Image 1 (cartoon, helix red, strand yellow):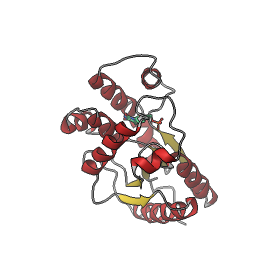
Image 2: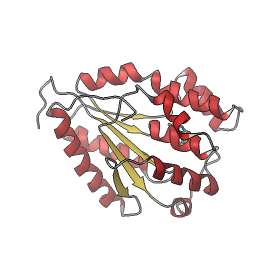
Image 3: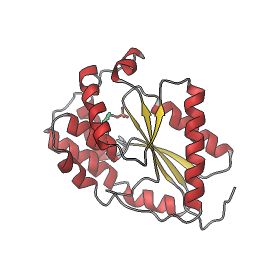
Image 4: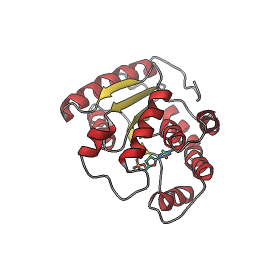
Amino acid sequence: NNHSSDSRGALIVLEGLDRCGKTSQSSRLVSYLEGLGHAVESWRFPDRTTNVGQMISSYLANKSHLDDHTVHLLFSANRWEKRSLMESKLKSGTTLIIDRYSYSGVAFSSAKGLDMEWCKAPEVGLLAPDLVLYLEISPEKAAERGGYGEERYEQLEFQEKVSQSYKTLSESSWKIIDATLPIEDVEKQLRENVLDCLTVCQKGKPLSELWL
Ligand code: 2DT
């Protein structure tokens, strides 16, 4: 491993439908990287701990009602309020594993019928991920896993639309992982892709901004 202090951390994003396994895979990934001696943190969006995040959380719990455009901009603002911390962590060598990012923002809001270009606009200038790992699962299979909660969006018909939006949004650089494989196989593929990405970042790949 190259732990020279001048190499930056990598910005790694996990995306996918609800129940695709993102959250448990991201914590496994963080433990794995820690075990290898990397500086790494696990983040997630929405970050419900901020004031903006609390507004989002109450909306998701159906405790408040907000116009679709308004909540879209809150999700974006929730990323903007973490941007400078994100940049300083990365520059000081910490790798960030992020559970959902701008792609969730655009996929979920456009699934409600908002224009995709309009949805992308407030994300312009946020840091671009070095790697997007998409955990692919059909909405039907995800639903079979059970455990959809009570939150807004956790319904099959809506997840079908989100799945379509992700397809429209997906870029050739995304690593598409079959999320229906056994947990250990998914984990192995994630590890391989992440280690490759860390190498590229350590070699001096510059940080860039959305929307690429
Ligand atoms: P979690 O269940 O992962 O906490 O997500 N969402 C998320 C959006 O609609 N826009 C966004 O920008 C982000 C990051 C996805 C809560 C829900 O919020 C949705 C599921």
